[in-house]
Image 1 (spheres, rainbow, N blue to C red):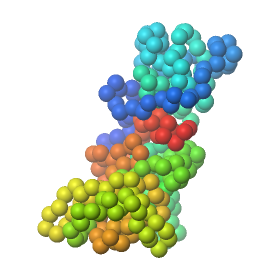
Image 2: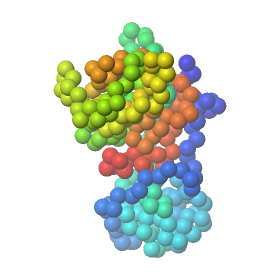
Image 3: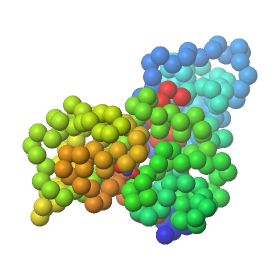
Image 4: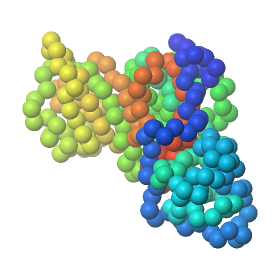
Length: 280
Ligand code: URA
């Protein structure tokens, strides 16, 4: 297992800068309108943009001039506007950007065998061991079973953690499951309609077969449930016991090519998209 280390080659702690080609989240149209200049304290917008890696102050001024920057849903018309990075929602080309520096969120590719806890009194390996002292106050967002691998978010932002994990916010989690047995044709429909489990019904947001070979299939399940062992129980209930389970995405954040045991800091664009998704 690789110890978490932002300076490690395996640790893609990049993600800080602005890149035109990243996938970005739209700004919510109902966002608060900016207050008139002079009504507020705060920092100059171009300074905040420059610190967030959007571009130098000069480049940021040009972007403001070109109408590419909005604050709380309204395109900025004037130079020198003051913003409060802890409250205001800033978007570049309509795409929300996290500008706060006082909170941090990481993605970990949790290996199987590691328990989702910051410490363990039985000395089993934990995600806490993997993140070490990366940031004080990190908490894991929801849980993965000990045997489940894949994307686990960790954040210092308690409210973000709560909203991402709570089913009422509807954040979709995507899993790839290796199952034995053949997948009935009507299964997607049944799963979308709801399956009764011991602790109540569960519905998936989507289901598809990714691959089938020699009596084994790989299926993708998307759902916004947080109940214990939910994917394993659901698939076992429909006759498809799971032999391997990997979470590949949480909302817009994807595991992609992260190697098992590595950790990376989310970019400002990824954080903007997550915050937008849960109304922060
Ligand atoms: N569902 C499961 O069965 N296990 C997990 O770790 C996550 C979702």
